[in-house]
View 1: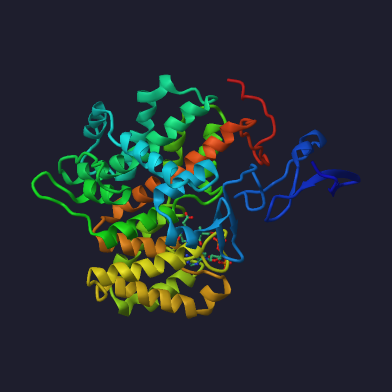
View 2: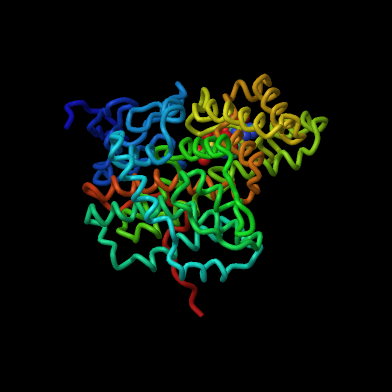
Length: 424
Ligand code: CMC
Protein backbone atom coordinates (compact mmCIF):
# COMPACT_ATOMS: atom_id res chain seq x y z
CA UNK A 1 0.00 0.00 0.00
CA UNK A 2 2.93 2.37 0.72
CA UNK A 3 6.74 2.51 0.70
CA UNK A 4 6.90 5.57 2.88
CA UNK A 5 7.75 5.18 6.55
CA UNK A 6 7.74 7.41 9.61
CA UNK A 7 10.27 6.59 12.31
CA UNK A 8 9.34 6.87 15.95
CA UNK A 9 12.00 6.73 18.66
CA UNK A 10 10.88 5.50 22.07
CA UNK A 11 13.83 5.34 24.46
CA UNK A 12 16.55 3.50 22.54
CA UNK A 13 14.02 1.74 20.34
CA UNK A 14 13.35 2.92 16.80
CA UNK A 15 9.99 1.94 15.32
CA UNK A 16 9.12 2.22 11.63
CA UNK A 17 5.51 2.99 10.81
CA UNK A 18 3.85 3.04 7.34
CA UNK A 19 2.61 6.39 6.02
CA UNK A 20 -0.48 6.50 3.77
CA UNK A 21 -1.83 9.29 1.56
CA UNK A 22 -5.46 9.97 0.81
CA UNK A 23 -6.67 11.70 -2.37
CA UNK A 24 -6.32 15.06 -0.59
CA UNK A 25 -5.64 16.10 3.00
CA UNK A 26 -2.96 15.21 5.52
CA UNK A 27 -1.09 11.90 5.29
CA UNK A 28 -1.67 9.43 8.09
CA UNK A 29 0.83 7.36 10.06
CA UNK A 30 -0.40 3.83 10.67
CA UNK A 31 0.24 3.28 14.38
CA UNK A 32 -1.61 -0.04 14.66
CA UNK A 33 1.57 -2.03 15.24
CA UNK A 34 2.57 0.11 18.24
CA UNK A 35 0.57 -2.08 20.62
CA UNK A 36 3.06 -4.89 19.96
CA UNK A 37 5.84 -2.51 21.04
CA UNK A 38 4.12 -1.90 24.36
CA UNK A 39 3.13 1.74 23.71
CA UNK A 40 -0.12 3.47 22.75
CA UNK A 41 -0.63 6.83 21.08
CA UNK A 42 -2.29 9.43 23.30
CA UNK A 43 -4.76 11.87 21.73
CA UNK A 44 -7.64 12.93 24.01
CA UNK A 45 -10.26 14.70 21.90
CA UNK A 46 -8.95 12.87 18.79
CA UNK A 47 -7.26 16.04 17.60
CA UNK A 48 -4.65 14.25 15.45
CA UNK A 49 -6.25 10.85 15.02
CA UNK A 50 -7.80 9.48 11.83
CA UNK A 51 -10.11 6.79 13.16
CA UNK A 52 -11.16 5.37 9.78
CA UNK A 53 -10.85 5.57 6.02
CA UNK A 54 -13.76 7.34 4.31
CA UNK A 55 -14.66 8.62 0.83
CA UNK A 56 -17.75 10.64 1.79
CA UNK A 57 -16.79 14.11 3.02
CA UNK A 58 -13.61 16.16 2.98
CA UNK A 59 -12.91 19.20 5.16
CA UNK A 60 -9.94 21.56 5.03
CA UNK A 61 -10.42 23.65 8.14
CA UNK A 62 -7.65 26.11 7.33
CA UNK A 63 -8.98 26.89 3.87
CA UNK A 64 -12.66 26.74 4.86
CA UNK A 65 -13.36 23.88 2.41
CA UNK A 66 -16.19 21.35 2.76
CA UNK A 67 -16.71 18.82 -0.03
CA UNK A 68 -19.34 16.10 -0.24
CA UNK A 69 -18.14 13.37 -2.62
CA UNK A 70 -15.93 16.10 -4.12
CA UNK A 71 -18.64 18.74 -4.60
CA UNK A 72 -18.22 22.06 -2.66
CA UNK A 73 -20.96 22.69 -0.14
CA UNK A 74 -21.80 26.15 -1.51
CA UNK A 75 -22.43 24.67 -4.99
CA UNK A 76 -24.66 21.97 -3.53
CA UNK A 77 -26.57 24.52 -1.43
CA UNK A 78 -27.09 26.69 -4.50
CA UNK A 79 -27.93 24.10 -7.14
CA UNK A 80 -29.14 20.96 -5.42
CA UNK A 81 -31.87 20.00 -2.98
CA UNK A 82 -31.66 17.96 0.20
CA UNK A 83 -32.83 14.64 -1.23
CA UNK A 84 -30.36 14.89 -4.10
CA UNK A 85 -27.60 15.53 -1.54
CA UNK A 86 -28.81 12.48 0.41
CA UNK A 87 -28.54 10.37 -2.74
CA UNK A 88 -25.07 11.76 -3.42
CA UNK A 89 -23.76 11.16 0.09
CA UNK A 90 -25.06 7.63 0.14
CA UNK A 91 -24.26 6.51 -3.39
CA UNK A 92 -21.16 8.54 -4.21
CA UNK A 93 -22.49 10.11 -7.44
CA UNK A 94 -25.21 12.62 -8.31
CA UNK A 95 -28.35 10.88 -9.57
CA UNK A 96 -29.68 11.14 -13.12
CA UNK A 97 -33.10 12.81 -13.36
CA UNK A 98 -34.78 9.39 -13.49
CA UNK A 99 -32.79 8.09 -10.50
CA UNK A 100 -33.64 11.20 -8.49
CA UNK A 101 -37.32 10.93 -9.32
CA UNK A 102 -37.35 7.28 -8.27
CA UNK A 103 -35.41 8.06 -5.07
CA UNK A 104 -37.83 10.84 -4.10
CA UNK A 105 -40.82 8.57 -4.76
CA UNK A 106 -39.28 5.84 -2.61
CA UNK A 107 -38.63 8.24 0.27
CA UNK A 108 -42.25 9.44 0.09
CA UNK A 109 -43.41 5.83 0.31
CA UNK A 110 -41.73 5.44 3.68
CA UNK A 111 -42.66 8.73 5.34
CA UNK A 112 -45.46 7.44 7.61
CA UNK A 113 -44.67 5.99 11.01
CA UNK A 114 -46.06 2.63 12.10
CA UNK A 115 -49.29 3.68 13.81
CA UNK A 116 -48.25 2.00 17.05
CA UNK A 117 -45.40 4.48 17.32
CA UNK A 118 -47.93 7.09 18.44
CA UNK A 119 -47.95 5.24 21.76
CA UNK A 120 -44.29 6.00 22.30
CA UNK A 121 -44.94 9.73 22.06
CA UNK A 122 -47.82 9.45 24.52
CA UNK A 123 -45.51 7.83 27.05
CA UNK A 124 -43.47 11.03 27.44
CA UNK A 125 -44.28 13.90 29.74
CA UNK A 126 -45.67 16.89 27.83
CA UNK A 127 -42.71 19.02 28.91
CA UNK A 128 -40.10 16.48 27.78
CA UNK A 129 -37.33 17.99 25.65
CA UNK A 130 -37.99 17.08 21.97
CA UNK A 131 -34.43 15.69 21.74
CA UNK A 132 -35.24 13.29 24.57
CA UNK A 133 -38.35 12.18 22.68
CA UNK A 134 -36.44 11.87 19.41
CA UNK A 135 -33.68 9.76 21.01
CA UNK A 136 -36.30 7.42 22.42
CA UNK A 137 -38.51 7.18 19.33
CA UNK A 138 -35.65 6.63 16.86
CA UNK A 139 -34.18 3.99 19.18
CA UNK A 140 -37.64 2.40 19.27
CA UNK A 141 -37.62 2.00 15.46
CA UNK A 142 -35.18 -0.86 16.11
CA UNK A 143 -38.01 -2.73 17.81
CA UNK A 144 -40.18 -2.35 14.69
CA UNK A 145 -37.65 -3.36 12.05
CA UNK A 146 -35.13 -5.55 13.89
CA UNK A 147 -36.17 -8.81 12.18
CA UNK A 148 -35.65 -7.37 8.69
CA UNK A 149 -32.18 -6.09 9.48
CA UNK A 150 -29.27 -8.11 8.22
CA UNK A 151 -26.49 -5.52 8.18
CA UNK A 152 -24.38 -7.60 5.80
CA UNK A 153 -27.14 -7.40 3.16
CA UNK A 154 -26.77 -4.20 1.01
CA UNK A 155 -30.46 -4.23 0.02
CA UNK A 156 -31.61 -4.35 3.64
CA UNK A 157 -29.17 -1.58 4.52
CA UNK A 158 -30.56 0.51 1.65
CA UNK A 159 -34.16 0.07 2.86
CA UNK A 160 -33.07 1.10 6.36
CA UNK A 161 -31.57 4.27 4.88
CA UNK A 162 -34.82 5.02 3.03
CA UNK A 163 -36.87 4.49 6.17
CA UNK A 164 -34.64 6.74 8.27
CA UNK A 165 -34.52 9.63 5.80
CA UNK A 166 -38.27 9.39 5.19
CA UNK A 167 -39.40 9.08 8.80
CA UNK A 168 -37.15 11.64 10.49
CA UNK A 169 -39.25 14.70 9.45
CA UNK A 170 -42.38 12.94 10.73
CA UNK A 171 -40.70 12.05 14.02
CA UNK A 172 -39.24 15.56 14.40
CA UNK A 173 -42.57 17.29 13.69
CA UNK A 174 -44.46 14.92 16.00
CA UNK A 175 -42.00 15.68 18.82
CA UNK A 176 -43.09 19.31 18.44
CA UNK A 177 -46.79 18.58 18.05
CA UNK A 178 -46.72 16.46 21.18
CA UNK A 179 -45.07 19.21 23.21
CA UNK A 180 -47.70 21.80 22.19
CA UNK A 181 -50.61 19.40 22.53
CA UNK A 182 -51.70 19.60 18.89
CA UNK A 183 -52.78 16.61 16.81
CA UNK A 184 -50.09 14.81 14.85
CA UNK A 185 -50.21 15.69 11.16
CA UNK A 186 -49.63 12.87 8.69
CA UNK A 187 -47.09 13.39 5.91
CA UNK A 188 -48.31 14.72 2.57
CA UNK A 189 -46.73 13.16 -0.49
CA UNK A 190 -47.67 16.01 -2.83
CA UNK A 191 -45.23 18.31 -1.00
CA UNK A 192 -41.46 18.49 -1.22
CA UNK A 193 -39.37 17.15 1.66
CA UNK A 194 -38.91 20.59 3.26
CA UNK A 195 -42.49 21.74 2.56
CA UNK A 196 -43.84 18.54 4.07
CA UNK A 197 -41.79 19.09 7.21
CA UNK A 198 -43.12 22.65 7.60
CA UNK A 199 -46.64 21.34 6.97
CA UNK A 200 -46.33 18.67 9.66
CA UNK A 201 -44.87 21.27 12.05
CA UNK A 202 -47.31 24.13 11.51
CA UNK A 203 -50.36 22.63 9.83
CA UNK A 204 -53.49 21.74 11.82
CA UNK A 205 -56.58 19.78 10.77
CA UNK A 206 -58.70 22.96 11.17
CA UNK A 207 -57.05 25.16 8.58
CA UNK A 208 -55.36 24.81 5.24
CA UNK A 209 -51.62 25.37 5.56
CA UNK A 210 -49.59 26.44 2.53
CA UNK A 211 -45.84 26.33 3.11
CA UNK A 212 -44.11 29.60 2.10
CA UNK A 213 -41.69 28.73 -0.77
CA UNK A 214 -38.93 31.04 0.53
CA UNK A 215 -39.11 29.50 3.99
CA UNK A 216 -39.25 25.97 2.52
CA UNK A 217 -36.13 26.76 0.46
CA UNK A 218 -34.37 28.10 3.57
CA UNK A 219 -35.37 24.95 5.45
CA UNK A 220 -34.01 22.81 2.63
CA UNK A 221 -30.71 24.74 2.80
CA UNK A 222 -30.51 24.15 6.54
CA UNK A 223 -30.98 20.42 5.85
CA UNK A 224 -28.26 20.46 3.15
CA UNK A 225 -25.76 22.42 5.24
CA UNK A 226 -26.11 20.04 8.17
CA UNK A 227 -26.20 16.83 6.13
CA UNK A 228 -22.70 15.59 6.88
CA UNK A 229 -19.50 16.78 8.47
CA UNK A 230 -16.93 14.02 8.33
CA UNK A 231 -15.91 12.30 11.59
CA UNK A 232 -17.48 14.72 14.11
CA UNK A 233 -18.49 13.60 17.62
CA UNK A 234 -21.94 12.24 16.70
CA UNK A 235 -20.79 10.52 13.49
CA UNK A 236 -17.90 8.92 15.35
CA UNK A 237 -20.42 7.80 17.97
CA UNK A 238 -22.57 6.17 15.27
CA UNK A 239 -19.50 4.48 13.81
CA UNK A 240 -18.35 3.23 17.21
CA UNK A 241 -21.81 1.90 18.09
CA UNK A 242 -22.11 0.44 14.58
CA UNK A 243 -18.71 -1.25 14.81
CA UNK A 244 -20.23 -3.71 17.29
CA UNK A 245 -22.85 -4.80 14.74
CA UNK A 246 -25.63 -3.07 16.69
CA UNK A 247 -29.03 -2.38 15.12
CA UNK A 248 -28.73 0.71 12.85
CA UNK A 249 -31.71 2.55 14.37
CA UNK A 250 -30.09 2.16 17.78
CA UNK A 251 -26.82 3.44 16.30
CA UNK A 252 -28.58 6.53 14.90
CA UNK A 253 -30.19 7.07 18.32
CA UNK A 254 -26.67 7.09 19.82
CA UNK A 255 -25.70 9.76 17.27
CA UNK A 256 -28.73 11.84 18.30
CA UNK A 257 -27.66 11.56 21.94
CA UNK A 258 -24.12 12.72 21.10
CA UNK A 259 -25.43 15.57 18.97
CA UNK A 260 -27.52 16.95 21.82
CA UNK A 261 -24.60 18.50 23.74
CA UNK A 262 -24.10 22.29 23.56
CA UNK A 263 -20.54 21.92 22.24
CA UNK A 264 -21.96 20.07 19.19
CA UNK A 265 -25.51 20.22 17.79
CA UNK A 266 -26.98 21.85 20.87
CA UNK A 267 -25.12 25.05 19.95
CA UNK A 268 -27.91 26.49 17.77
CA UNK A 269 -30.31 26.27 20.71
CA UNK A 270 -27.60 27.69 22.97
CA UNK A 271 -27.21 30.66 20.57
CA UNK A 272 -30.81 31.70 21.07
CA UNK A 273 -30.64 31.10 24.84
CA UNK A 274 -27.57 33.33 24.87
CA UNK A 275 -29.32 36.08 22.87
CA UNK A 276 -32.22 35.93 25.34
CA UNK A 277 -29.77 36.13 28.27
CA UNK A 278 -28.01 39.16 26.76
CA UNK A 279 -31.46 40.70 26.41
CA UNK A 280 -30.46 44.15 25.20
CA UNK A 281 -27.85 45.68 22.88
CA UNK A 282 -26.49 47.71 25.83
CA UNK A 283 -25.45 44.41 27.48
CA UNK A 284 -23.38 43.11 24.56
CA UNK A 285 -20.05 44.57 25.69
CA UNK A 286 -20.44 42.99 29.13
CA UNK A 287 -21.06 39.57 27.61
CA UNK A 288 -18.12 39.94 25.21
CA UNK A 289 -15.93 40.61 28.27
CA UNK A 290 -17.41 37.56 30.04
CA UNK A 291 -16.57 35.41 26.98
CA UNK A 292 -12.97 36.64 27.11
CA UNK A 293 -12.60 36.12 30.87
CA UNK A 294 -10.80 32.81 31.50
CA UNK A 295 -12.35 32.61 34.99
CA UNK A 296 -15.85 32.80 33.55
CA UNK A 297 -17.23 29.65 31.89
CA UNK A 298 -19.39 31.75 29.53
CA UNK A 299 -18.54 31.34 25.82
CA UNK A 300 -20.06 33.06 22.83
CA UNK A 301 -22.30 30.32 21.51
CA UNK A 302 -22.18 29.90 17.75
CA UNK A 303 -18.58 31.10 17.57
CA UNK A 304 -15.50 28.95 17.00
CA UNK A 305 -15.05 25.51 15.53
CA UNK A 306 -12.70 22.61 16.21
CA UNK A 307 -11.83 22.20 12.54
CA UNK A 308 -12.58 25.51 10.75
CA UNK A 309 -9.89 27.95 11.75
CA UNK A 310 -10.46 30.39 8.89
CA UNK A 311 -14.19 30.45 8.22
CA UNK A 312 -17.03 27.97 8.20
CA UNK A 313 -18.15 27.64 4.54
CA UNK A 314 -21.61 26.60 5.71
CA UNK A 315 -21.91 29.81 7.74
CA UNK A 316 -21.34 31.89 4.58
CA UNK A 317 -24.36 30.30 2.86
CA UNK A 318 -26.44 30.40 6.04
CA UNK A 319 -25.70 34.09 6.55
CA UNK A 320 -27.15 34.95 3.12
CA UNK A 321 -30.18 32.73 3.72
CA UNK A 322 -30.73 34.39 7.11
CA UNK A 323 -30.94 37.78 5.43
CA UNK A 324 -33.39 36.46 2.78
CA UNK A 325 -35.64 34.97 5.42
CA UNK A 326 -35.63 38.04 7.66
CA UNK A 327 -36.50 40.21 4.67
CA UNK A 328 -39.30 37.89 3.55
CA UNK A 329 -40.80 37.92 7.04
CA UNK A 330 -40.24 41.66 7.57
CA UNK A 331 -38.24 40.88 10.70
CA UNK A 332 -35.11 42.91 10.04
CA UNK A 333 -35.83 44.98 13.17
CA UNK A 334 -36.47 42.08 15.56
CA UNK A 335 -34.61 43.07 18.79
CA UNK A 336 -33.02 39.65 19.36
CA UNK A 337 -31.86 39.45 15.77
CA UNK A 338 -30.42 42.93 16.09
CA UNK A 339 -28.39 41.72 19.08
CA UNK A 340 -27.16 38.80 16.95
CA UNK A 341 -26.04 41.08 14.14
CA UNK A 342 -24.23 43.45 16.52
CA UNK A 343 -22.57 40.53 18.30
CA UNK A 344 -21.34 39.15 15.00
CA UNK A 345 -19.91 42.55 14.05
CA UNK A 346 -18.10 43.08 17.38
CA UNK A 347 -16.70 39.55 17.51
CA UNK A 348 -15.39 39.81 13.96
CA UNK A 349 -13.44 42.96 14.92
CA UNK A 350 -12.34 42.15 18.48
CA UNK A 351 -8.68 41.03 18.82
CA UNK A 352 -9.53 38.16 21.18
CA UNK A 353 -11.82 36.53 18.61
CA UNK A 354 -9.75 37.50 15.56
CA UNK A 355 -6.48 36.11 17.03
CA UNK A 356 -8.15 32.83 18.00
CA UNK A 357 -9.97 32.67 14.66
CA UNK A 358 -13.35 32.43 16.35
CA UNK A 359 -15.75 33.11 13.49
CA UNK A 360 -19.51 32.63 13.59
CA UNK A 361 -20.23 29.01 12.75
CA UNK A 362 -23.21 27.49 10.92
CA UNK A 363 -25.24 27.24 14.12
CA UNK A 364 -25.10 30.95 14.76
CA UNK A 365 -27.07 31.70 11.59
CA UNK A 366 -29.23 28.58 11.49
CA UNK A 367 -30.52 29.47 14.97
CA UNK A 368 -31.50 32.93 13.75
CA UNK A 369 -33.31 31.52 10.67
CA UNK A 370 -35.16 28.86 12.65
CA UNK A 371 -36.32 31.42 15.19
CA UNK A 372 -37.55 33.70 12.41
CA UNK A 373 -39.48 30.81 10.81
CA UNK A 374 -41.23 30.34 14.15
CA UNK A 375 -39.55 27.14 15.26
CA UNK A 376 -39.09 26.98 19.04
CA UNK A 377 -35.48 26.81 20.26
CA UNK A 378 -36.00 23.39 21.82
CA UNK A 379 -36.56 22.03 18.27
CA UNK A 380 -33.33 23.39 16.80
CA UNK A 381 -31.15 20.40 17.60
CA UNK A 382 -33.96 18.09 16.51
CA UNK A 383 -33.78 19.71 13.07
CA UNK A 384 -30.00 19.31 13.06
CA UNK A 385 -30.51 15.60 13.87
CA UNK A 386 -33.07 15.23 11.08
CA UNK A 387 -30.55 16.72 8.61
CA UNK A 388 -27.53 14.81 9.91
CA UNK A 389 -29.27 11.43 9.75
CA UNK A 390 -28.14 10.97 6.14
CA UNK A 391 -24.54 11.67 7.17
CA UNK A 392 -24.70 9.22 10.07
CA UNK A 393 -26.35 6.62 7.88
CA UNK A 394 -23.89 7.06 4.99
CA UNK A 395 -20.95 6.55 7.37
CA UNK A 396 -22.61 3.55 9.00
CA UNK A 397 -23.31 2.11 5.55
CA UNK A 398 -19.76 2.76 4.32
CA UNK A 399 -18.38 1.06 7.40
CA UNK A 400 -20.58 -1.99 6.88
CA UNK A 401 -19.82 -2.21 3.16
CA UNK A 402 -16.21 -3.23 3.81
CA UNK A 403 -14.04 -4.81 6.44
CA UNK A 404 -15.08 -3.56 9.85
CA UNK A 405 -13.37 -4.04 13.17
CA UNK A 406 -14.91 -3.23 16.53
CA UNK A 407 -13.78 0.20 17.79
CA UNK A 408 -11.87 -0.16 21.04
CA UNK A 409 -9.71 2.81 22.15
CA UNK A 410 -7.04 2.35 24.83
CA UNK A 411 -6.06 4.66 27.71
CA UNK A 412 -3.31 6.18 29.78
CA UNK A 413 -4.12 4.64 33.15
CA UNK A 414 -3.54 6.98 36.12
CA UNK A 415 -5.47 5.11 38.84
CA UNK A 416 -4.21 2.97 41.71
CA UNK A 417 -1.74 0.21 41.06
CA UNK A 418 -2.85 -3.21 42.29
CA UNK A 419 -3.62 -3.35 46.03
CA UNK A 420 -5.17 -5.89 48.36
CA UNK A 421 -8.76 -5.68 49.54
CA UNK A 422 -8.57 -4.77 53.29
CA UNK A 423 -9.04 -7.73 55.66
CA UNK A 424 -12.17 -7.47 57.88
N1 CMC B 1 -16.19 32.04 23.08
C1 CMC B 1 -15.10 32.48 23.73
N2 CMC B 1 -13.87 31.90 23.67
C2 CMC B 1 -13.78 30.79 22.89
C3 CMC B 1 -14.88 30.26 22.19
C4 CMC B 1 -16.12 30.93 22.29
N3 CMC B 1 -17.19 30.47 21.63
N4 CMC B 1 -14.49 29.16 21.51
C5 CMC B 1 -13.18 29.00 21.78
N5 CMC B 1 -12.75 29.98 22.62
C6 CMC B 1 -11.36 30.21 23.07
C7 CMC B 1 -10.97 29.22 24.15
O1 CMC B 1 -11.20 29.75 25.44
C8 CMC B 1 -9.48 29.08 23.87
O2 CMC B 1 -8.81 30.25 24.35
P1 CMC B 1 -7.30 30.15 24.93
O3 CMC B 1 -6.47 29.66 23.78
O4 CMC B 1 -6.99 31.53 25.35
O5 CMC B 1 -7.36 29.17 26.06
C9 CMC B 1 -9.39 29.12 22.35
O6 CMC B 1 -10.52 29.91 21.95
C10 CMC B 1 -9.46 27.74 21.67
O7 CMC B 1 -10.63 27.07 22.14
P2 CMC B 1 -10.76 25.50 22.35
O8 CMC B 1 -11.80 25.25 23.40
O9 CMC B 1 -9.40 24.92 22.56
O10 CMC B 1 -11.29 25.07 20.93
P3 CMC B 1 -11.93 23.67 20.57
O11 CMC B 1 -11.53 23.38 19.20
O12 CMC B 1 -11.63 22.64 21.62
O13 CMC B 1 -13.50 23.97 20.68
C11 CMC B 1 -15.71 24.58 20.12
C12 CMC B 1 -14.31 24.21 19.60
C13 CMC B 1 -16.69 24.65 18.94
C14 CMC B 1 -16.22 23.49 21.08
C15 CMC B 1 -15.63 25.94 20.84
O14 CMC B 1 -15.19 26.94 19.93
C16 CMC B 1 -16.93 26.34 21.48
O15 CMC B 1 -17.22 25.95 22.61
N6 CMC B 1 -17.80 27.15 20.75
C17 CMC B 1 -19.10 27.49 21.22
C18 CMC B 1 -20.05 26.34 20.98
C19 CMC B 1 -20.43 26.20 19.52
O16 CMC B 1 -20.76 27.16 18.85
N7 CMC B 1 -20.40 24.95 19.03
C20 CMC B 1 -20.84 24.63 17.67
C21 CMC B 1 -19.78 24.09 16.79
S1 CMC B 1 -20.33 24.06 15.08
C22 CMC B 1 -21.50 22.83 15.00
C23 CMC B 1 -20.97 21.45 15.06
O17 CMC B 1 -20.16 21.09 14.18
O18 CMC B 1 -21.39 20.71 15.96
